[in-house]
Length: 221
Image 1 (cartoon, one colour):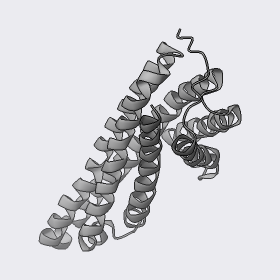
Image 2: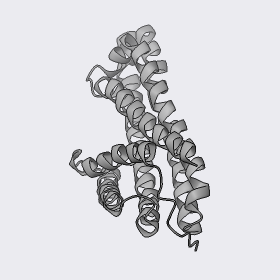
Image 3: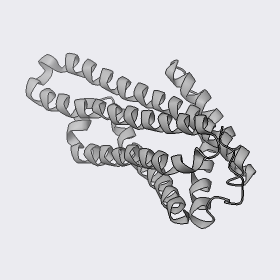
Image 4: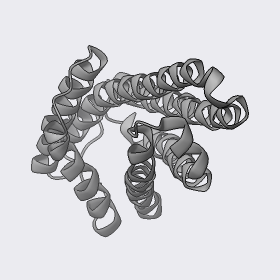
């Protein structure tokens, strides 16, 4: 079991790092005014960023699969909810990658079409970017709901220190608020992500070093 928990911790860190690096590479490109031109000139960078974000989406499913046997011993309904939310999150993240891929296809057409089709292709490119961000925001909304269930299990079961569980509850509540506002078209910045980011670094480190507290009594519901 300790080996499984270390793998889960490693997957959490892999997911976080691959997403941060991938989005850090992709974000500046998607916010440029000459969107299609910049995408065409940075094709390899876009492919690398999408590959890293794909790794994140795959790691998310791995985390859910490995945690499910342990979590369901303490609360079956919440454990299933967490598992389902991470599968949904992964699916939404993978679908969101289609947007940048569409940009790559449109950038080739921009080069061949010249100025005659530039406005039309630019409009399609902007739509692809908006769809990419909308799907990401929905994925974060799903993640926050499922992870609140996860943190409730951790808090009730004492599998990890309760302070860590509380940080997770605060963090995912902030993520829920932030993603809900983003879906509604309101941008509140990244300040609400901070507690969740702390949790997603502290939890995997704890799992790798200490693992779950196996002296707690399982009380599945």
